[in-house]
Length: 149
Image 1 (tube, rainbow, N blue to C red):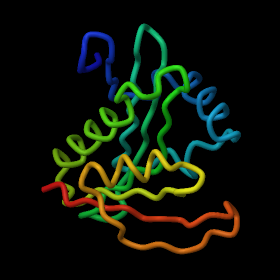
Image 2 (tube, one colour):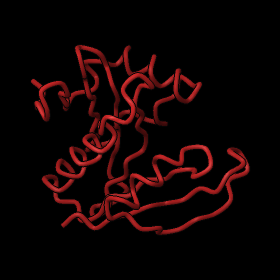
Image 3 (cartoon, rainbow, N blue to C red):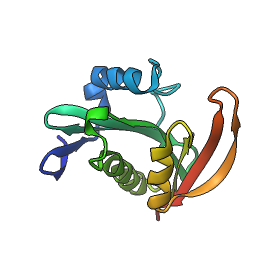
Image 4 (tube, rainbow, N blue to C red):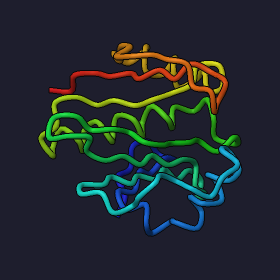
């Protein structure tokens, strides 16, 4: 069962229930089939957001180590952007990571390609942990992190 956050947005904790929809959204946003390199991490959090009965977004992450939880990938469907869905998915993942005992949450982003993810993090207490040039994406790769406990 999902957690109702607002009248029209529901966060589901088991994204595998919506895997085909997630793959379609992933292809639309990122132009690739790969969600993350492996789906067998333990623990693995795979959240989906539904709005008006449709997949509005997803977020998937796993442990980097016993203290740091890593949000590996997430996306919001274009039709549902600017409605706070990415923020709600982020905070749902933070809450779940805290319950699992993690002390920090981190994620990577590419500020030129995905400026919204940089803004989302900085507005919500994330700070730059490291940054370097990524040849593959022809952009800076920025690691953002936030203490969550």
